[in-house]
Image (cartoon, rainbow, N blue to C red; front, top):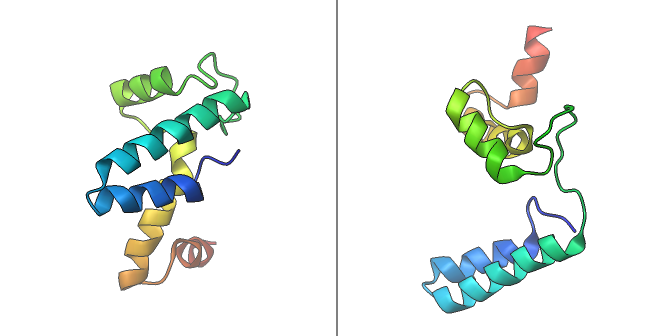
Length: 100
């Protein structure tokens, strides 16, 4: 089961934006039930960590130390940053290549 960019859940957000909150809530509940029922390890972090797969505690600790974001959020943040950078200068990979 794919969590990041899940098409079904993205469709649920369309209902939310239309104000159809009952449909959205049911789709959100279904999405979470599918994630939990899959039994898969959805944590993409490779660090040897006692919190592996425990998203709630991981986020709490990262918020607590405010040093960096959890690995699972990097792709999403980079996508957003890339969109902003493209407005003014190109994209993240262009900037990375220019530094080498």
